[in-house]
Length: 286
Ligand code: ZN
Image 1 (cartoon, rainbow, N blue to C red):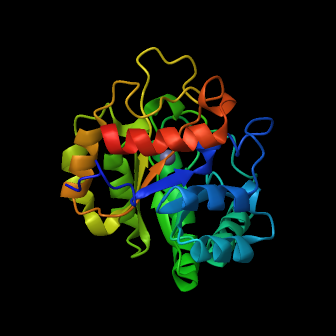
Image 2: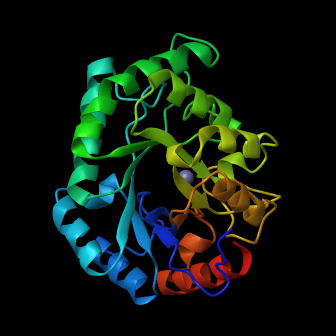
């Protein structure tokens, strides 16, 4: 397991941590300001959301590389199924391909996928997961040609209804097996998997060449809002170092991306202070 106690070159910022991806929150930093501030602190990478990029993907990607940062990922593909997905198969696939194009222009290593919830008119997870597999199969080849890896991020089961019918790493790896595309893998987010006692076994089943991302935050014991009250690493009950150990034992050696949605705490602070805290916590508790 890597020793981060004196080295945060594997630390990446997901800009959600600064409130950027939600209307009305955040300090309003431009992507360029985010890049410069992360580079000045020695971060290894940055992860953007599509709404921040607009039509400037190529120039933002270039700016990051010139600053010495990798664009570790892009959030995210549209929901592929469920009540929040674009309406109709073709609309989903069109937007999915647009997200792939943006990731390619940005030279983002990975496009993250949150699959969406239970498809209207159906019940339970099984039918929705079949639709997800079909839509993934349609776009994986397009993404491969564009040089973009696709990372399925299973979410905590509390989001099963509207945001993700994919709620365990077990099902995410099974979906990878079904679709069987070389550029399809998984992203592991502490917030979504910390409770799963099967995690280490499923990470081993996934294998290092299918783990495309690792997301850091914490689960607050008395969380007030499962969407927007994530904890900073060290403030909650997740065994972050244990999870990282299992992720690395499975073969992952990439960047670790901090993703803290926190509207009443971290999003209210000066982004400079937040970035400093990330470095401290990464070294101390991750
Ligand atoms: Zn995540």
